[in-house]
Length: 212
Image (tube, rainbow, N blue to C red; front, side, top):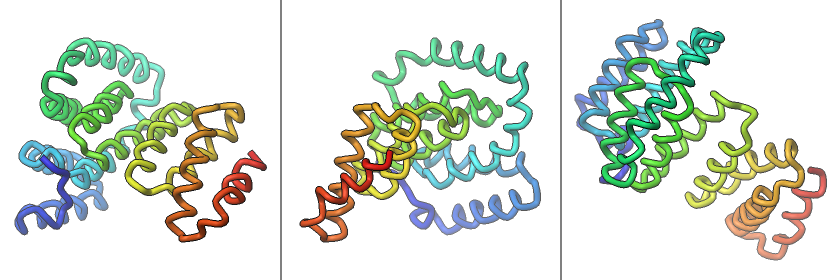
């Protein structure tokens, strides 16, 4: 099953997505969650629908940022990880469905999005992987590992310029991070080649790492 973009959906479903977008601007979070969940149940690879689902869920973050919320999420994350640990190898698509069910319940712990990223990788759903990593960055903004994961995904997807942004952030925080240095070199070379400036490859990389 390949990833779907919205314009590949049936016209009636496209209208539902647009209605959900309109409802979100008016604060209709519950309506958006229900529409997105129903759509994802039929079309689980439609990453733009899952992205809209996250936009709606983002408005619930202040509640989960309390101490009680963080503790609850930590406990939920452990239980979720334990209950789904065999699904990744056995049935990654079922793991995607399980994650979406948790999202409908407004469960926003990091382990859920880590599972989405891994399941997306197993299924070859690059955009869903990238979305999961972006959410993890929002939930745990100081964790360099999420940015490194996203950079790898973006680099594999031939989007080196986006990868460079996250790698430079990582190296500003951890200047000796060898993995980030290697990825930045690769991303810089790829970005230079995309622009067609083959002769500037070495200079481009050094100019990006010199000031880190």
